[in-house]
Amino acid sequence: MTARRTTFLFTALGLLTAALFIADLAVGSVAVPLGDVWAALTGGSCDPATSDIILKIRLLKAVTALFAGAALAAGGLEMQTLFRNPLAGPYVLGVSSGAGLGVALFLLGAPLLGVAGHSFVRSLGVAGAAWLGSALVLAIVMAVSRRIKDIMVILILGMMLGSGISSVVEILQYLSSEAALKSFVIWTMGSLGDVTGSRLALLLPVVTAGLVLAVAVIKPLNLLLLGENYARTMGLNIQRTRTLIFLSTVLLAGTVTAFCGPVGFIGLAVPHLARMFFASADHRILMPASMLAGAALLLVCDLVAKLLALPINTITALMGIPVVIYVVVRNRNIF
Image (cartoon, rainbow, N blue to C red; front, side, top):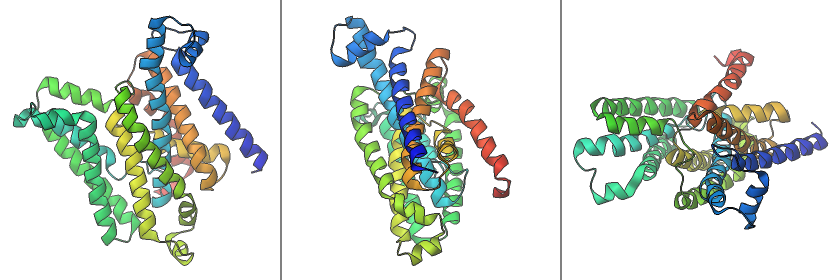
């Protein structure tokens, strides 16, 4: 692939993402002209109500979509390379299940135990409970990875851990009241609209730290493409690399799940789209390409979700499933 074509694709993808970002600000239940969007963003003359819609609602959602899409795509690429599995995603370590357990304990378990009114429980919130659940799963996986060298065993254990946590969540669902159960089900559908300004101020630095870590492991990821044994002969510290990748993925996927709910298929499908369009296995190209493509795709999903008044998870699944089917059909030998 020529450098000129790579530059063209990055430029086109960057412009597309910027255009989708502006469109996400303009499109909604109340359509806002592009001139008013620009005026609201730059402090120009604009109707106060329109300015509030843009700055206090749509801008928060668009920025969240931008960072969440980039985070999930980067996490998915890291997991697919580390496990050498094209169907691995950012939630493969059980991060989503851990977050779900935290939220289930907060929304379903606390009322059952009669501690829903406790000051600590109330201050924790849904996002805090989800983040604690994700961090707990990370701690378990990292403890296991120090003792087990085979990366595929870690993958299987992560999947089993996720299944076990899902069983506990199902028990809590069975025992819970209708109102608490409805709140939990709505959380599982995913939403970009629940991120307030204060939450965004917390989400952005954590996700940025995860993205910086993802960029820092680009060279180790390229070495891992050739196999762990070869990477060791090249001087790569496998244990340290695994730890950094695990930490990056949980910062990315765990934080997005905590604030937006489990947004599916972005982390699984986008790295494959980046590989197809850029025709490269080099992570110096794939990592930024996946981040941009993930941001663009989640902005598209948010636009469609707003127009059809559907949960974001429904749209990401409908867009991601064809890509996953294509990968499975093309790589029949993965089974």
